[in-house]
Length: 453
Image 1 (cartoon, rainbow, N blue to C red):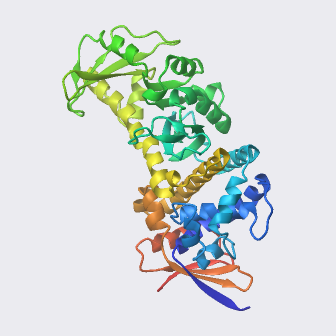
Image 2: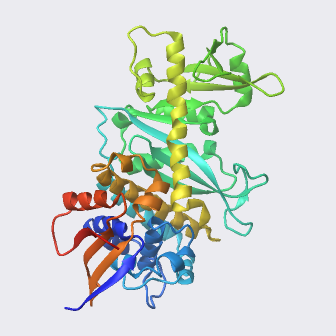
């Protein structure tokens, strides 16, 4: 049988190609998501596949497909494609996406998540489950559906949509993600996001009693706090109502400085607000540039042990107020290294904020594809991390830019079936991919070796 060889700038994506093929991701996607569009050369599911490959290859925009994937025959072959759809036809497929397709895609992603997520397999008896919830703005044009004036960081009079994310910080996985119009804030979407997450995880009362929900001030309304407490969750949240905050801080009898946060003082609220269940409330203040103080209040029902565990610290035998204050602040501030970092990773590594479609459902489909791309990349990174502590620390940007960008040669037969992948041995991470391939996939007709490119 005649052999052909193609060059690929992203030959290391063979590992994701092998993972997705072994787990029948593409067959399930085709079987479950049915976009009503006539197939001329490439089916709608083929185009969704091209979008995902483009994300892993670092293509930040839909138009990047023409320069990243269409010009890389070897990359196409790795994923079983003999050609690639043109970016304009991919955009047409997204435009054809309906609300029904979004439900289909959500069901498909939930199935994949349950089958491969460590978060879904979490042992509640051994450890608490941590859910971080946040909202981030996505700039869009005036004519885009759902594009409204709202809060968009760094954008005065910004207009766009909002993305709500529920993130599993312990496992670096996106549990649930939803697209909202631009005016929606976290206070209005928090309970819905938590409820959707319960459906993904099949959470019952016992699970909720072993789950911590950590949220910033955007979601800290009385209604949200009370409902989460009534549902049995453990919470660590910031009060949203500034008038309530001003009232609470006036009851602080003693302020204590924090060496870890220069300029910040903390103190117990003397007369806490009464929620549906008992909570502790800690006030924080820091100076304004023109005099006076900024204030906020943290509300939580966590035990001292839970606080120290959440902060990654050991509970001391002799606990002081100073030690507890420091642990509380660290436990809360770690959310910035969790959900906020994950959002940054999606934007920088997968171009989440650089793909805009006019239709709301089309944009929602792009969001769900990015969620799937993120989680699969994390699961493959977990395999790589067994052979490299360096890759274990990679964020999404470095993973896509460095680990998934190892060049090589792809050998395939006249039917387009790949039978040999030669990674550039000069790349410092190539050996990690070789070791992972041999360890995780049984020998078959497809081989991966290192060589000179």
